[in-house]
Image: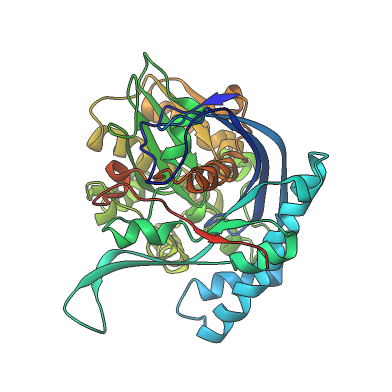
Length: 408
């Protein structure tokens, strides 16, 4: 059971009083493009004007993308994709997300009709955190696009679906990322210690939680690559026979090239101050090709290339702490797929020189946390509670994120 210190204010028209319990399913597909994670959660709120949330996870399931679908998604994340393909995949992924939601309810022994809401992140296919000139007018704006149609999820499941969370934050000047700090407050905040919730998915993002953390004093941002570069390197070096380095086995047998690692850390993103966010546009296929080419020029064997890519993730995370946080953490709590790479965790532990644990020790599966986060974000949206964290995203003010799609 986790407790949320949020310091939120209800929007006008919402009613307080009483304890409210809901069954909410959170759906997440990240930049690793592994598939859809679905967490069926029991969420209780105290009904106050500034509600507290308690969360228990009833079930967690993953629906992996088959290789052809994964390849199609990856293509639309680059300039290789077409608008027609994005349109088709938007509906296709809606069905995949809906199936995952039903599977999570079944795994929890809960009839789908007894689920109160679904919160779906969708699949990011484009994220442009650097403001760009618009075709109309003189404004420069950020933009983002997640697919996996919420209306289709609602229709397939019969359950009101909250989706497309990021755009509301962008509309008020934010990056639309990171969104997970709202949940990190629920799951990890401690009265006495300085903690960092470090998610290592395709992209790595951290939430710095000072003692007595609240939404007003939290810092959060994307530190850089998580598994994305490691996975991309492994896929290219094995001609697609392997899609990731299971438990860091390849990296463990390699030697890190300090020279290449130092050069990689010169990348501008690592020196850009928060708020900031990134994605495949920065660390995707093109970056992986360049990284491997540089390693090949130095005649590095495959194991050393994977070891150096793994060290880049660990080094960039720790460097972000030193550069952008007021102090090094008392504890780093890791979630996401990177939590299962023991070589990466050992490297991170050495870099931060402090205790590195996984969120499993807090009662949430390392691979489930982001799906749980979107169950919480959806619950807040239903309550009319602002669920962005402006100190993390750079938004001008708190807003209620998420578009409500009722079943027809």
